[in-house]
Amino acid sequence: MNFVAMDFETAKYSRESACAIGLVRFLDGKAGESFYSLIRPPILYIRPDFTEIHGLTVDDVRDAPTFADLWDRTILPFIGNFPLAAHNAPFDMGVLRAVLEWYELSVPRLNYFCTLVLSRNVWPSLKSHSLPRLGEHFGINYEAHNALDDARTCGDITCLAAQKIGSPNLKELLHTARVRMNVLS
Image (cartoon, rainbow, N blue to C red; front, side):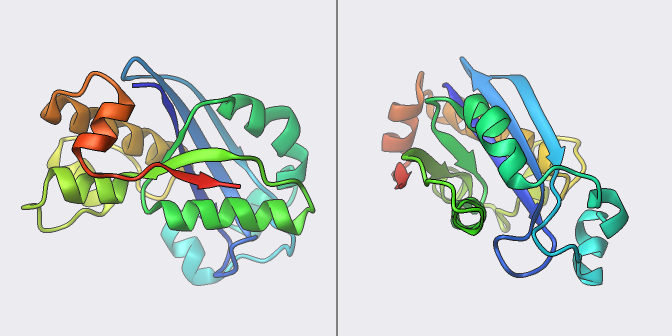
């Protein structure tokens, strides 16, 4: 059960507008090292309705590093060769691809899976599979839309799914739960 859970917050609808990232490394099914950073988006603007969701303002990110500043020296080494887990992975992988392209950074070959699909397949009777509702259902107390807390909760949901199914490793969990390992490249 080794993977890195990831979550982005964005400043507006355009995917390259990442304004926060959270990463949590899970080893043997347990949360370990984590990384959190605010990110200065390429255009220094945060929609007011997005601030209402994640609480971040232009003043918060004005002096933050850009994604390009963080990528090679921090984010990519933190991910290493681990697969990524994200809740609603198409969104987070879309943000990752968009910021890489914006800064003309090469897109690495990264494996990833979606914990939203995982939760729907493992707990089909739940009325909602949103991360806040899953956290509430499983008694995970966390701050929704905080990138680090979202990433940690996403990883915790993966580990709970493994326990429910009785899977000793990620490959077996994804196979049993009929969740596809995708590749960003």
